[in-house]
Image 1 (cartoon, rainbow, N blue to C red):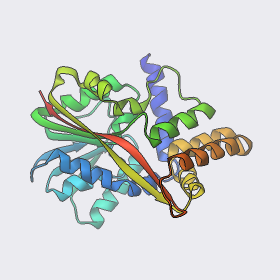
Image 2: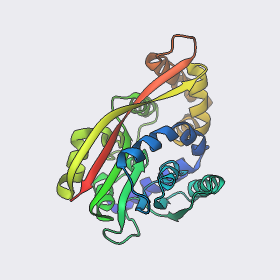
Image 3: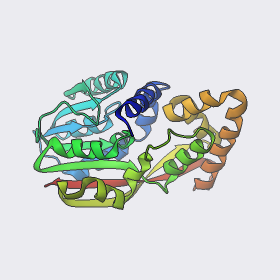
Length: 269
């Protein structure tokens, strides 16, 4: 795929993630960041880079460990929210607008590089993996949490994609949640790679309430509904409600939807 096409995809992605209110969704999944950062076993004073940090879930979790954190994302508005959240907790973090595929950092300049359902969305997966490992020092830690292909979020992307097809030639972001693909992407850049499947549980009053929340706040679904318009959006809404109901494990009339993610902890070669 040409550089020009990739740049077009990224420009569209930036608009998507800047739409809605991703912070409202990120606030729900903050426990994923805490769990991933704890698995990374950071030391106080460690220099940590959060790639595709969004509104700062992993950055804040790392700052709570006493780490020196730099949060990067290619959507400036999301980093503004990250700074506000960190300031509210009196946690110092530095933010910088940056592309996961071209990090403005020297080789080996961080003790740990983390990304929680962020870098997985960069369209050039090989380049992203190369950048994540490049900026991590030898013997340092790379920690990620990525939605799996077979989990709820993976199914949700496929459901949306049947109504609004993704750009051709771009590998699905949930491939980052597949252990064989992760091993392929990192290759011999890492000396050790530990993966574990985990599940985060979304909790709402009903499947309809869940679908409404994502339609309003989550950029990818919000943009899909905008593209379909009122008439085309109704079938997608029905698809999402049915999907949520299929994954729902609640027995009390509410909605509890486990969504699997792959937690990755690697040692830089």
